[in-house]
Image 1: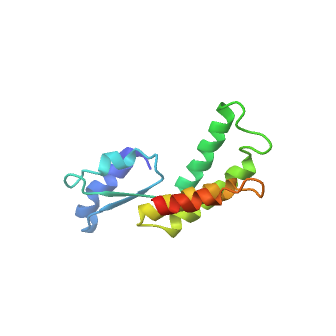
Image 2: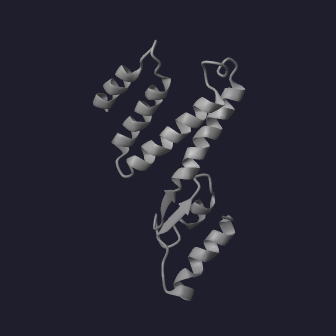
Length: 134
């Protein structure tokens, strides 16, 4: 959403519709929130992010990292299929633990170790260890 448009919507909402917006749903990299967060006082608007957009950014940044870092991609390493799998598990971990940051962190780390685990190199012991540490 354009920053000026968001500000106008929040500013005239009380006069036009007799309501006050207290929440802003965005895609995470929107600058519109910075314009409206203090519209009715300090931190009067709360920011919420779309989980789908966060999930998409994880995949985009991993692909960008793979492209910019030599030796990170290839067979048995960071492939597009593996990035898609991580992205899906990341979204599941977030959706399953909304409101509980500690469990969310544990679920994300466990999903990563689960994806990295093979029969020759099982990593699930590390995931269980981290689950009890957090």
